[in-house]
Image (cartoon, rainbow, N blue to C red; front, side, top):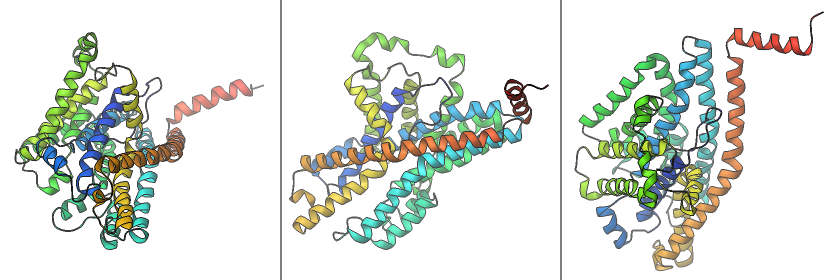
Length: 405
C-alpha cells in the first residue's frame, strides 16, 4: 500500500491524480474486507460479486504508487550526492527519519488500540484471541508481519491487525531501497527488471505472495524513466480532448484488475504479475498529473480527500468493522450484526466511523508528525552536507553580518 506523499522537491506540488489512485485502492481494499469481517459470516450477494470481480488488487496499486513516489523523490537526491559518502549517508538517514515519523506513530497507535479492544471490548471474540493479537502486534512492531501472515495463512489465527502485512513489506522496501541505490547506482534499474522477471516465472506460494515486489519494482522503473525523452513522448495528451470519455481507459483497466483478482482467475499462474503491470499502467497515467484519470470536479475533489487520508483509512477500517460487530453482539447476543440492522445501514455506519476517525488521525497525528519528521530530517541532512559548501555558506554569512576590520 502507498501511504501518503513523500517529501517533494521544491516547486513540485502534490500529484492529485496519484491521490485519486490512492483513494480507489483503499476503497477497494476496504470493500473487499467487509465480507467476513463486517458482514459476518458474509452476504451472499457480495460473495457472488467477489467470485467474478474482487478488489484486493488495491494493495498492489498501493505498491506501484509507493515505488513510483518514493523513487521519484529519493533517486535524484541519491544521484546528486553520488561520490560523497557523508552526503549519501545524510540523504539516506533523512529519508528514513521522514518515513519513521510519517508511518510508525499512526501504525503503533492503532496496534495499541486494537490490543486494548482485544482485552476490554471483545465479548463476541470479533477481535480474536489475546495470544494471536499479541503475536500480531509484535510482528507489526518489528515490521515482519508479512512473514507471520504467510506462516499463518489457512493454518492458524493471525489477529485483528492482519492488514499490517503490506505495511511491513513497504517498510522493508523503504529500508532496503536507498542502500541498494547506494551500492548499485545506475544498475538499480536492472535489479528492478530482474525482480519483476523472476516473480513472473515462479509459482506464488504464500511466502512469495507476502514478499511480492512486482508492483513496487515497476513503480521504481517508472520513476527512473520519468525524466527521459521517451516518457515525455509517450504523454497521452490526446485524452484531454475526450472530456469525460477519458475516464473510459482507467475504468477499463480497473475492471480488468477486478476480474483478474476474482476467485474465477485464482488458478492463473501469471495473474499477480498481470495485476502489477496494470497497476503500473494506472500509475503511469497518473504520473503526468494532467487529469488523465478524471476531470476536475466534485468527484475528483472527493477522491483527493480520500486519497490524502488513505493511510489512516487502511489502518482504521478493520478495527471499526470489528467494533461494530462487538456493539451488535452486545445489543442482541449474536455475532451476526445483520440480524440487528440491514447491510446498508451497517455499511453506512462503518463508512461514517472510518471517515471520522481517519480525518482525526490525519489532522491531529499524521500532519503534525509529518512536519516534525521533515524538520528533523532536514537538520540531520544539513549537518552532513559537504564541508566545503557549509564553510562557504558560513563565510558568506560572516562577511554579511560581521565584516572583518
